[in-house]
Amino acid sequence: MVELGGQSKSPTMRAIVDCSLGDLIAVVVIMAASGMTVGCSSEARTADLTPMGAGHIISQKWSQDLLNHFHVVLHSDTLIECGVKNDLWKLAETTDRGYTRTSYQLTEKGSKVLFSIDLKESGKGHEITLRGPYHYEIIGITPGTQPDIRNVELRWEVDWDKAPGELKACVPKFELSGHEVALFKQYDDGWKFVSYLKPEDAAPAPLP
Image (tube, rainbow, N blue to C red):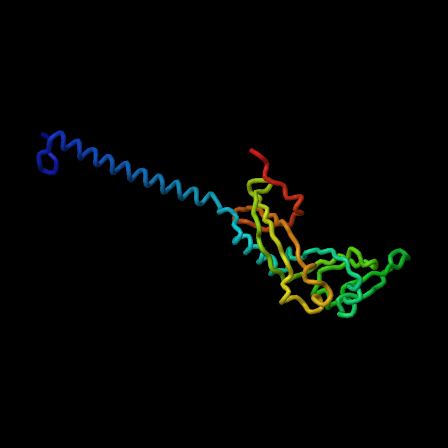
């Protein structure tokens, strides 16, 4: 007989008590190890980029007038005249090495509406770089060329309700939209919006 807590216990009872204590210790050890493992992994791994997270970062950039200058090309025989009439641009002369060149340049008012222009007298291939404001929709996130790269595909369009009246008078709504692929990179403090890619340059992740 074995004495335990002042009472006699049989070998069978002792075995049960020893087994219960052993099981309890094992459970505590497993729980502690699991907790440590979860804690370490949560510190080491940053959450993957989500559409909501990407949208928030894009909006922050645009609010600082960064990475929001979208380029459109359009054909119009009335665009030049309309822009002059609405004081968006004017014809100006520049002289370089004795050669005088005429081109349309943004006015002070136009510089608040547009980022840049390259207008063609032929009416074909006018190039306009916009400032927004925009609506956008994220339509996909795919791995990039490296594990810490994500390609965020989005569609955008000028917010017609907030667009300046001069712009709406000269450029049709359907011309003020486009498609972009934004390059995001993961750093120690999270994901950052780095630049835009052309859709054909957004290479998929290499095969394992």
